Length: 546
Ligand code: DGJ
Image (cartoon, rainbow, N blue to C red; front, side):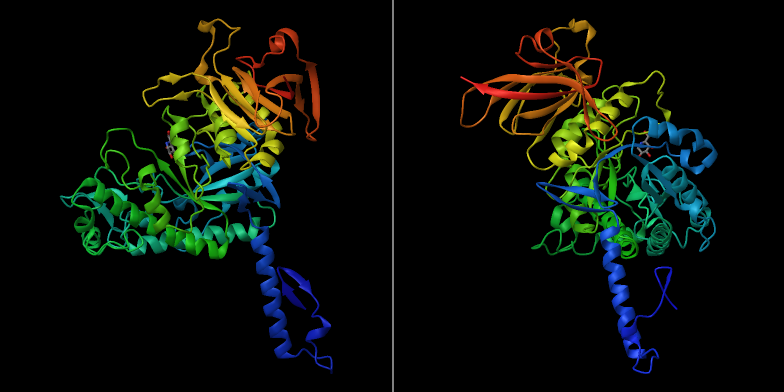
């Protein structure tokens, strides 16, 4: 009996000799074929990205998936008991995905001996609650520091060197120039992927991997250890500057900006080593997240060399195996920052979209999915959100879950947009109306509700999405929006409302209409209104006249 993928199979007739005995040559050829078939099956079956119009989509279990997510607090997943009451709540809150840390110290407490209990209990709990997982690999670095490495790494400074200040003092940050650190980190990361391939390859509970967490050097722009300083004198890699000859200072000048580019390049190369090795074992989509920099700060005052907006191209060159770079957005200028990571070569995914209890988070979710084709959206510390009475995030996620099929069908095809007021770095809210062309109509969306006293509304929380689902049919959802419309292209120049229904999608995805909205609800046919304070969906058909 031959074992292929754990299943016993009889050798097929074609590998037998005419005497009915196995022919060694034919058996080898058969096995090679079986392995190849298995590999191609595996590559197709693993969660992966594929192009969709101007963007990419995530395929899980053979179907497109939108990650309506939340990230756990840093220590929550280290205890199955602590997490036990939360998993079902997260499902009830309409999440389909949880971002959860897996730390090096927990899975490899003794070098070379792996303990998968914390991983397996999370897989089991997620599956029992119809949730997918994105695993956050807390390896060498977590928020710049190296506190999640096992004690045998922490305590062996000669084998696992630390980054240093200019005066030679060591930091609680492992040096990116320690090759034994990189190799040990890589080994643990690969062991984790091999374990996932084995225990989760068929179920696909884990849909993506985050490699490390918010990498970046503090409190100086670069590592000053001897190995780092020697590397600073190496020629600038041609991938960064094809015509450059000379070391970093020679090519880019002596400045913190140069030191930061150098830092970014070497962090990216370290990550690439993990990604390259990991993907040969289990090629899940992989990304890094970034702690964004506050304005007017020097590198080192913020984590220097992370995959920051001004360093995206260096990271792309240094870590080409990454599927994307992702912003953690805690600043008020969400729309501007998210837009920086929405590029043809970088589909947007937001692993940390501020703390889950912030009131502007739902509006950001609609904007990220609708305007920037985000693969997923995930506020931080999701298990701490109070669901009784239902909060805004829960209601917004219910609407997004209902709209998922429509969003998935529209992504990257010019059939959808998201709306929310732009907010500047200093918190100034720009609530002037925004226009977007979607299909055959131009929508102009206002964020101030004309029927609610100004003192009773908070426009920074207003937001929504418009999705074209037919030539003149649109789903308009969110809260605190007033949408006006005008026809585009050839034909009668005026637009009216043929019909506007409020309603919901049931669990089978069928539209269940509520009231037919007209009269005061549409201002006698002038506009579509989503009142503040209540997330809702309307199904609207427009028409043209002259
Ligand atoms: C960003 C980090 O990536 C998270 O792990 C967590 O520490 C949050 N900051 C806390 O706000």
